[in-house]
Image 1 (cartoon, rainbow, N blue to C red):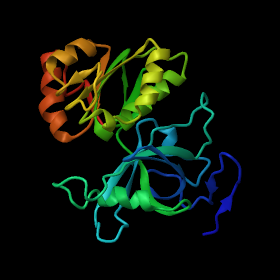
Image 2: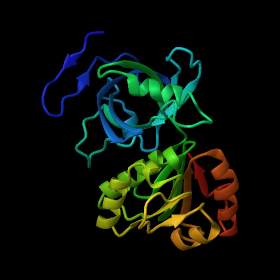
Image 3: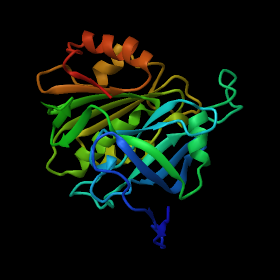
Image 4: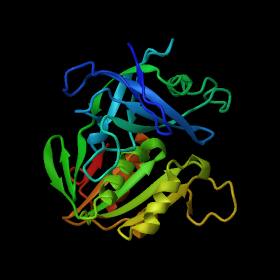
Length: 285
């Protein structure tokens, strides 16, 4: 496939649209540029090859891919951290993607590292990757409104609980709310990681929290590796939730994304203790 390059400080790769514009068909993505967030995090700008359709246009959506790297034989899902709407200056058809790379030889339990994340990190600029999307059953449509399995939901305040790379769909929703000055939805984020260095997108979250009173962010790490840590150490406990997320109410929804054990053994039981109806008012990405 022939690529057309537009040069300049913010150049992007472009290619013709390949498929019909419908849910869960195969699309071509182009790696536009990569930057280092820190030693294990990567930022890639991906071209969806269409000016009419985009994962970036559905807040909370992601894409999926069948393993292309030799020997993987599996699938994986990825979520962008940016979106297009009338209030943004983004180019339609593009979205930013954060990939946490698990390098081989760093953890004794996983000597080979993350096969697919290392494969994505190795792709040169301009590489083509087949994906399916947009994927996901939760979409934020703005000003407190969601579509969940196609059905409308509304909230004035959000209790958002994330673990590790599970911050990405949470980040999308927060970004969409704060970009709209008419969106008055209150946002309470509790974000858990192993150490401070594992926190994704912290600079953006902290900056937003300073600028916007309707956003509150609290971090939890299992182990603090530097002095002066002013947030919680350990796990997301019931006391942390009571202090940093709103109580259950008819106009409050809880959103979560993270490792399944965190959701099953920590998020769900503690939200129930706070009065949340986890069958109806807990949205799991």
